[in-house]
Length: 116
Image (cartoon, rainbow, N blue to C red):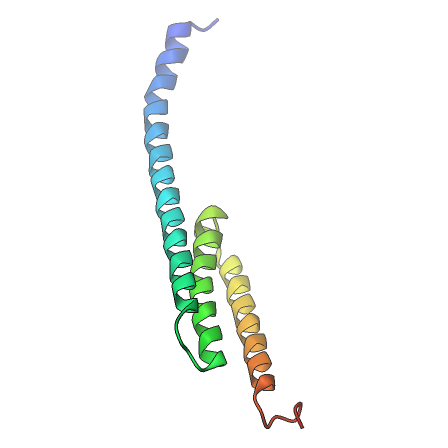
């Protein structure tokens, strides 16, 4: 039969370390949340810029969205500490999304076979 004081004293030494870890993670999540808010403000501000080119507008929007997506996937979904396979899949996804966006923008340009 164990004594309550022994079980309690062993637990209290370990919980101090856990509290520090939790506070560290909470600070990181708050920093990422603030970065996402700043990214949203930048996105809204960029929408008011007088940019003539549709391709440049889409490129700017995708750049900002990619940074915000990395923050969400990396920190909130805990993918920042995962193995190389996860990163390979993410890189392949980014490649295919960028390729499809390029094909979409290219097909909208006058003079392409689609518009003739």
